[in-house]
Image (cartoon, rainbow, N blue to C red; front, side, top):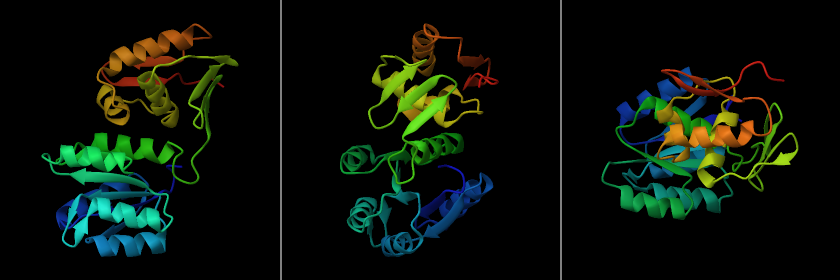
Length: 222
């Protein structure tokens, strides 16, 4: 889902728009931009983006209103709010009413990219994969059930999100900060450790630690 995904960036600050457009284009995404709520709705209706990165406050409205209009128009795009540091309370309400994720400004670009990739691969927006697989591990995104070699693997919510993140980023080494940003884990090292223990009971070691860098699924497995 992340390959060739189309992202709509909505912000009234040209420097923010230019920075995000350049960053996302560099990483292989197709990028469109808008500076107002009205432009965002028009472009989303015309271009059908897979993901919308949108400032919470725009000259002619706010991100929540844009979300409502997009959903009313049938858009299934993932929606990520770009928020000022003091907007946390409002954003909690935004997530409850349909925002998929949010990140405060100024943001770390690696954290932003991790969240974008995770959301695009999550399976909620149209076209997402229902089953994530690697080697003999399967994660059913409809039921959140996990199996290894056909055997069920009971996971906590956070362990499940860590596994989802790793499966969605096969071939990449993810840092602790990237995993925590994408999953909401308070201690990624501990969550990866407990997930590894549960998976290793049913097969060969699957998660590799790259010291000083982070974690990845083991290369070379079928």
